Image (cartoon, rainbow, N blue to C red):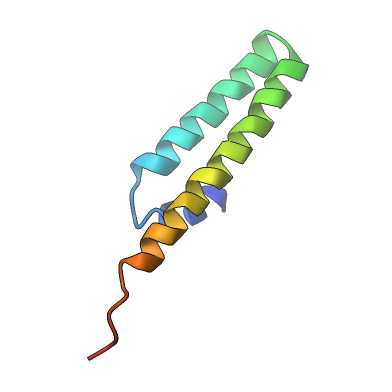
Length: 70
C-alpha cells in the first residue's frame, strides 16, 4: 500500500517508489547481516523518509490543477 500511495502522490512517477523500495530492502540486508538493532533503526528511518517524500509531492500534485473547470 505504501508503494502504491507513493506512486499516486508522486503523480505516476515510478522511480520514486522504486528507490524507496530498494533502500528499504537494503536495510533488511543490513539487519540480517550486521545487526538487528541497526537494521531496524535504518528501516524506521527509511519509513520516515518515504513519508516525507510522499508528502512533499502532495503539494506539487495539488498545485498543478489550480484553474477552474471550463
